[in-house]
Structures are given as structure tokens and as C-alpha cells.
Image (cartoon, rainbow, N blue to C red; front, top):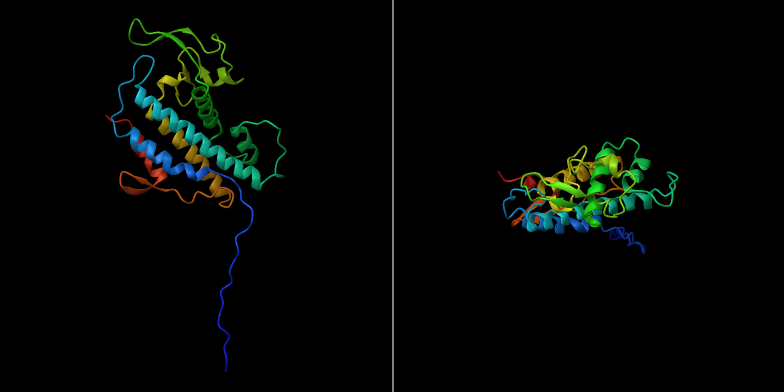
Length: 228
């Protein structure tokens, strides 16, 4: 009796692609965290932390927010008809439109405010002549910087901090402690989105190289704790 040879079914790749960057940022993020944490966290000054601490920290905040925006773009692509959206909408508002039970909405407003003040370098004119706490001479708005309409709802101008997560309103004061909070909020949001539908927010490929080992990206949150 002749038996036909079994031939496994081959699925040919589709000829289209969704150009979502998202997880491509994971290894660069791990590299920056490794660089940042290779030195102890400096004692912050009255108006700024060190250039090194600040530079790596600001870069990481930008990347974490970009990761979330990329995954959000994927959700918007795969769910184009689920909600009616205006032409221009912020990422936190877009996410809560798709996920009304989003648990991190308030925190995301502060994370995105932090991203904006870093990306647009909101300038404060400060008096540090007396040591200790710096005194405000001029705020970004007084200096002509265009701020978001919810700026005063999120930023306490008197303390130069955000009202909930205690982010600095001055980009020169951002350090690893603030990166850690951003990481936590972004990752909590992504895990929530993934639990809703893995195919919409696939968090695969998050194993990264870190200090000669393979680690899960989210485990690096602990690396950002300030050094005593």
C-alpha cells in the first residue's frame, strides 16, 4: 500500500506590515538604564541634578512615553471603528476612550506633562543665590512658553512640582527617581492593555541584555531605586 508523504501546511507571510516601533526601544532603554545606574545618584542641587544624571534620565522619560505612544498607535490601527475620535487627541484621552476603565489615566496626564516640559525645554528663571531652595524669578508662562491648557491643574507653580507624582516642573531637575515612576506608570498601562487583548498590545520580545545577563525589561524598574 502506498502512503502519500505528509507535507506540513506552510503559511506564507502576508504582504503588508504595520510599522509599529514599540518593542524596538526595549534594548536601547535597557542600555540607557545600565549607563545611568553605573554611577550613584548624585545629591540634587537647589535647581538641578548633575548633567549626567539629568541627560540620561530625560532621554529615558522620552523613550518610555514613545513606547506607549507606539503601542497606542497599534490599538488605534486595529480598532479604527470602535470609538468616534476627534482629529487631534492626547494619548491619555485616546487610551481612556478605548479603555474607559483605564486605571492609570490621572498618572498618565502627569507623565505626558513631564514629557512635554522635557521635550520643549520649559525654562524657569530661578534665583539660587541664597542656597537651599531656589526662588522663582519667572515661570515658563511668564517667559512666553506655550504650555498645555491643563498646565495649572497638573503643575503647582509655587512648588514647581506636579500635584500627584511629584515630578519636577523644571526639566533640569529630572533624575532616576522620576524615571522609575514613569517606568511604573507606563508598564502598568501596557500590562492593562495587554490583558484586554494580547493581539492588540503584544508585549513579547521584552528580554533584554543588561550588565552581561538576559533580563525581562520590567525587572529593571528595581535598578532605578536611588542609591543610598
